[in-house]
Amino acid sequence: MPAELEGIVKGLHHITLVTSNQEVNRRFYTEVLGLRRVKYTVNQDDVLHRHLFYADEKETTGSAITFFEWPDLPKGQIGLGSPHHLAYSVSNIDAIPKWKAWLRSQGVSVAGPCIRDGRISLYLRDSDGVNIEITHPDSETISSDYLKETDAALTTVTEITQDMRLVKFNHATPISYDSHQTAMFFDKLLALKNPSTKPNPDQPETAIAAIGNDDQPDFLRYIVSDEAARGFVGRGNFHHIAMAVEGDAEQKKIERRLNDFGIHNSGIIDRFWFHSLYFNDPDGNLLEIATKGPGYTRDEPLEKLGTNLILPPWEESERSKIERALKETDCNNHQTWPPKFPKVVSPPESIPYQQRRRLPEM
Ligand SMILES: [Fe+2]
Ligand SMILES: [Fe+2]
Image (tube, protein in one colour):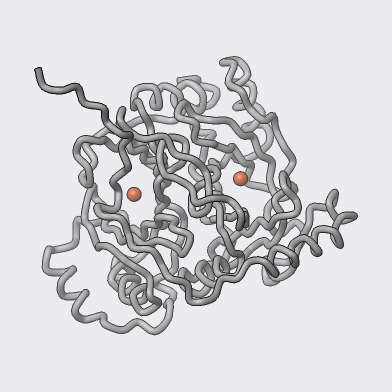
């Protein structure tokens, strides 16, 4: 592990996925999950399409889920290079049964609560099929009767109360072919540790490899299988996972490290609200290192975040062309609220295998 990089990756920064409809997406993440839209802008690499950012009330680093709106992209496929799910934390354990009641009242398919690996979790999917976990990192105080009792007691929850608020991401789960290779990659390039690799309770022939730092030892929880199928990016799937560093000096160190090892990367890109550096892990998952600042309040006051279409200054001259293109997208994109939410896959943390070709028994 390179000593000069130790401790500089601070956990998750944001996670970016693909949605087919910005309005349904906005209603789900704000009205059903209680997040706040903190930036309404365009994809800087494809400026005629939207980029939507949601985060907690204080736009905390590590709480932002963002979406590219690409209605014409085919449905994505989970697998190698296309991560499986993301997990938000709640700070109060009683929020778990409340979330279950609330989500059901909104017509969202929910599985759980499941108790495993020291955590208690619910699973749900948004209307594009994104797999989401809501988790509390302490299942030790829960008796087996607790879940039954609270389930029965909480038949109606009519709003998202303060104690239910989603806080930061707990983890993201990509898929890996080889846990050793994954562990070496994060150790050598980002000075992140692999404190455990354990059987996956949902699919014991696969494993869960934890990757993280001292504060958050498993902010990445890779599902590992040498039979995992290859995935691809599309509607309802991940585009990339961004990890946080404090500032430019730390980001530069990582860029140097990637270059020393000959890892292809984007170079540092100015995204106006933060600076970004992109590269792939060994399985083809797109990763990003993003700086904490300057932050979403650089061009909007905190109370107004996400209310108007904001462009980075270098795109302002294109505003009317961009607004026309977005209007056209909306004219051809007819989705209504409430959507039909897809069912949670069972078991929720299982992955698709590639087609096995078995030799006949001799
Ligand atoms: Fe998970
Ligand atoms: Fe990003």
